[in-house]
Length: 82
Length: 191
Image 1 (cartoon, each protein chain N blue to C red):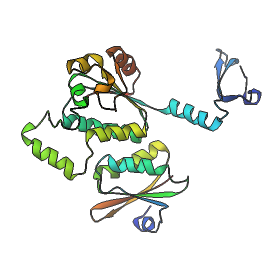
Image 2 (image 1 turned 90 degrees about the vertical axis):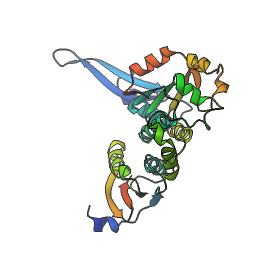
Image 3 (image 1 turned 135 degrees about the vertical axis):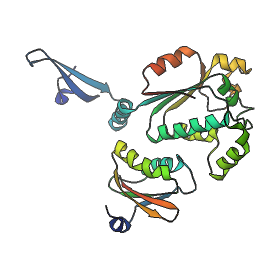
Image 4 (image 1 turned 120 degrees about the horizontal axis):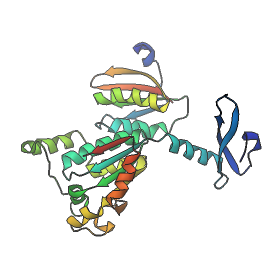
């Protein structure tokens, strides 16, 4: 998905894990995914480079749809659909 | 024994059917797995079975009692928790020292790059990394983690009872349990 399309997405849940280091953001995503319904979209904010690679892999394993990542100044917005 | 889902008793859940075939590809023995309902809650039971079947297992022989390696173990446990792995930790020798109630929070020994210990510990704080006990606790809350203290290791550090160790510890056991658990693990680590 293009960055422009990603930016137009409104997430049903935003998880701000910028204050934590690996594996904090992944664990925050794992906790929060239980709070949304199938088909809903979650946005994970992470300042951790490793998480940017971990979440797409985690999505594949868990059967969620990884939508893409937007790079912001000093952090990433990682979007996925349950 | 049921041949198919339609025959299944209402108190049982039909899981799946496997057919044994002879050399001529003729079905000779259908094998049917079923399970009895607990509290009549079929949703709960099927979920459990599904998780049980799919969960991968990590066994960890945890020898180190130093915070650098315990912190690394905590990070790996976080990864295992995110994937809902089943985890069995066997606390051996020096790790049993770190698991003693009086040591867990005050022990700040590191085992490598010891001349940079202050920088290392300050960086953990700066990066907001949880203390290893907290990382272990989070993993326990999120997935099935069992922590076993090796009985011999406990005695080496004057800990005879489970109560001598932090509440993360589930029991005191012998090495045989580690062997049989590690045998069928998908990942086995020594730290």
